[in-house]
Image (cartoon, rainbow, N blue to C red; front, side, top):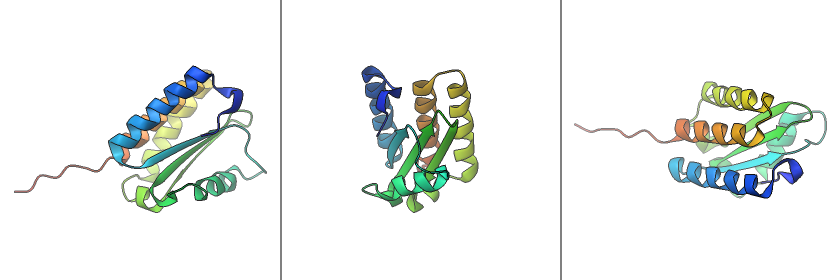
Length: 127
């Protein structure tokens, strides 16, 4: 996670807790990059960051560039089997709504929780 001076130390600790809870809930890894994206193509930058993760197939990367008002979510192949594009779009909408109110931490926490909830494997009952 890279958050620079956008988040205080206590905010970073709260974000770490949110990530830990999400990872325990859905068994996928979450990473957050909050800061300036390199280049003009923020999606390409987010994808490059995602590909550098330890287990990209099992990871979700959230990139937030507040100066550009850009939010990108990149999911690995294993994650995409459980998380649809529509569910990701809903989480991004929730995050950007919080960001517009000046709540970077709250938006990240909400988005991470939503993504984890949707990515959690469904329990099936067998007859």
